[in-house]
Length: 454
Image 1 (tube, one colour):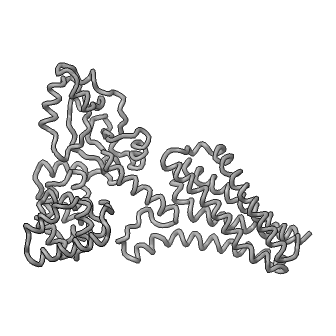
Image 2 (cartoon, rainbow, N blue to C red):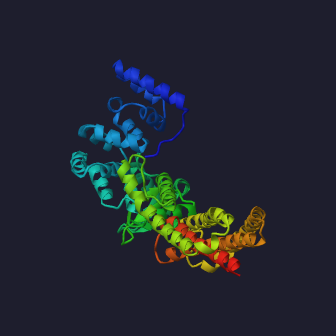
């Protein structure tokens, strides 16, 4: 339910005030004409400024097909609010106008009993289409596909196919045309221009494109998004285990999926929940973030114990202690840069988990070069502050070692986890950070003890 930012905020607020005035004046026809001037995404922005009661009354004014278009454009908070506020009868009217895949999303968002009640009240044809989609997991190809698809068989000729298209196409039918055999198994895709400009007697099997990418209903939506990127698709057919055509995913559906998956990866990379809607209660947000902070806390306690065990030899120089946060921060940023690149590359298929050696050879030298530059700068600064070559040498070597350790961890952990089927975005935030701090801190004090001890 994305909301497009197509209007300046003052215009939105002014339009919202106008809607409130028309509602208060009971000018339903004028309000309907006023809202008709805007794109559904712009209407969604305007209505989001209203309180719950006014929002419900505005929806009651709109015609069902218009209300359906606007509902799909609302931001998450307003969307859930209007679902709670709308009566069952009004909601059923809107659902009958929504495309089946969007209608299924609405029913899944409702409490189970209300969803069943509303679905039972829908018109039979729409109910059956929506019912098929509700059974699929929402983050799979079956959960995001449209089940309204034109069925043409490979034995048809162009004239027959044209007649069927005219009969079956409506405003909610995706524009892509696929060809099946008589048992419904996907055989290929048909371009509209080939249908328009081929002789009427030509068989579809002769003009269709046979080599068509496809996915099964249980394919993860992230893989669906990757296929759209790889093949520059506008539509992707969905088949069942028997290769029968059951639906189609269009590019507008995938844009939402890509945004959702990118947000999920960013949340995971930051060590929070996979999905953390802004409407979640405070305690749910805190509970989702708690495990990752607990991992960080426990790991940093290990670092404290490491530093404490080597504390006595290092007490002679306050400069050494002062530079420890700098070294930890530099190593952490090097790891974050590398892991971000790798996690993103793994997510979109640009990097394969088996490319371990290649990525070590690509990323570690870059990190070492950067580490060398800042290690020299840190060593010179520390040496001048402490008036000691030894102290400068400790700081420089320790920082170089910490950066080296961080770069290796940032490559190894995501790729190894991906190789064993563990999502690298989950571990590349807290786990890499904690491991870097422990090993980097250990390197810091070991170098200090060796040099001062000598």
